[in-house]
Image (cartoon, rainbow, N blue to C red; front, side, top):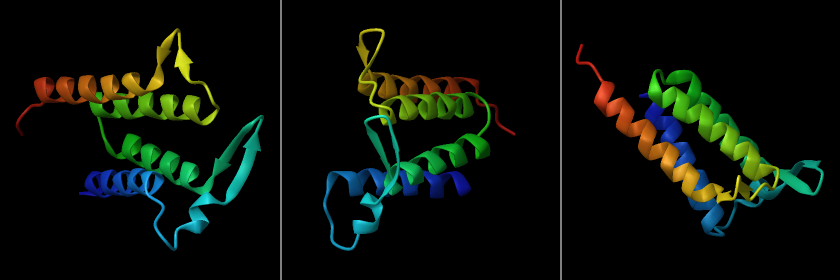
Length: 109
């Protein structure tokens, strides 16, 4: 149940980055500046939600959440590509592979 709450929080944060809804100005407040990248409140909240997922999940999904945390940190620092591959398809690839491995290795209890 806790994992569903973390996923809902991540979905809401993603939706708030796409739309400019009223009353969410506090999410754009600058927390810290790392080089030329500005870390905002919404970035910190996204990182905390990914860490929460990584802690509450186990198995292949926890590893996928750990990889997502690393890719999130790279995008936060302004790295657009990793070895010539854009990060956006890598994020989708990690999600698909993690979910597929979880489904294949899931055991009924």
